[in-house]
Image (tube, each protein chain N blue to C red):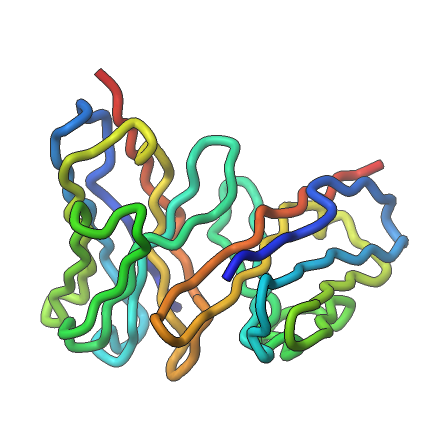
Length: 108
Length: 119
């Protein structure tokens, strides 16, 4: 399964809302997770099962979608949200894990 | 607190071998599947290997199958990645990650260790 993430680059200002898309080449049900990557920090799981917030993820983050189309939305951006975001899918047979190409969210 | 600390990276010549280690703490290591994920310079994340709780089942993508071997020592709460026949395209930061219990996603990650394959 291939994962196509867009856009690859996004510029926004604090307080704005942004959305990141992730499309799977075939249906993956809701086996989709979103991660945040920041320099000098371990990658952080934000959302799993398409829309379930991981413990500790702020409520301004939300995930939606199922099948092939998924979206990560961040409402009311805060300074700490500027980072790189990755989607990831899981295919059960055979077990494989595939990441999207990433979206760099930068301060406008 | 869950901690995953990778070690063993460095500069290695093409065709040679290298073994990475990941020391886990803060959780019952033997209860979790574990994985390695890598990131080439300026590139995205790529899954490299996953191992079951007992070590009896391992999974790899085609890009490393037959060259890389994932293993674990539950008594030492340690994860390993033996990398053989290394290629320049294996140059990357390698992350140890814990697969969430009974799930498919990676709920904790280490900070990574750099591997450079170059002559």
